[in-house]
Length: 462
Image (tube, rainbow, N blue to C red; front, side):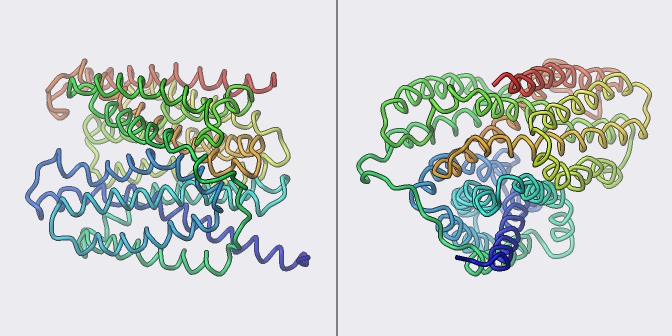
């Protein structure tokens, strides 16, 4: 038996691993955003091709997160985390030495697969290290690190790109990967994997169906408004989804226990609430960035300083909201967070014509607090419904809800902007038309957020 002191030391080590990996994987998803023009110039490729440097990473993370999460439940989450960190680190260092865009894209795709191993395991590992009454606090720290990674990525990446070049972004990330792997090797004890019948019972068919289903869905969503191929891909992904669901009910070890999400009201509604929350809020920064730079005439640097309000509030309040969800029923906090997000969106709609930066900052701050109120407690509520043998799979599903929600959010913006502005450059659009277009987007997001709030509140009936 471990002493209380030994248990506490182990928990602190696992927390350091989780926080570091939560930062690392999200940092790497956004750090190259401001380097795209330089990469395009170095390899002499167009915007359509170079955009895949960012997109392919996100797509492979989403496509492989659930299958690898199920595999982690079977083989051991700590082992999967260490394997993911090792592979991620090697590929990160290889990315800095590429001499062609094709090789960079291939390595980024592989990097996304290893990142999926990390996404699928870091939260389940920290959850299992803490008793139920302390899990919210631990998840709050992980969530805060996620927001810091997302918000710091473009800032740190932009500074490194400007002063040293984009290759050094991979060196920076590689060093963090090595540090995280060392922490994991020392501080993450191997867990007991789920006992499986035999390898022949693994859901290979489900994996073969799931990966292209998610890939085509997200890629199709990203093409909406710019290519007719989008609708064909979305329809095909939905057809694959129907076959996938039918297959899962037949499998002894399905990669997703569909019945678990159908029969457990709280689990199902919590994931749907997450999908709608990300769908309603992810594009806020994108739209407000356009508003600040095009409508109000601020520089990208000034706009960036204003926009950092929301992720800073998220990072500051996430740990305390997570801790609070250990004492207050999580669905109440999560529902309150959704209501705050609605307030943010409504504020943007009614105040945007006033050209006031103060209103923007206030609305962003409320949104940041709202997202902190929602995310950690919602994750805590989901994990409270998962058994040890399903935690990696369950958290992988949640990560997929996040990715699909983000893609849906940008899809809505793309469709509305194309319908309202067509091919007119943003700089040439009148302020009135541009602002009304943004307000329409926020109006649609309000509808999504209200639906998410209803689903979040409905968990009380379980």
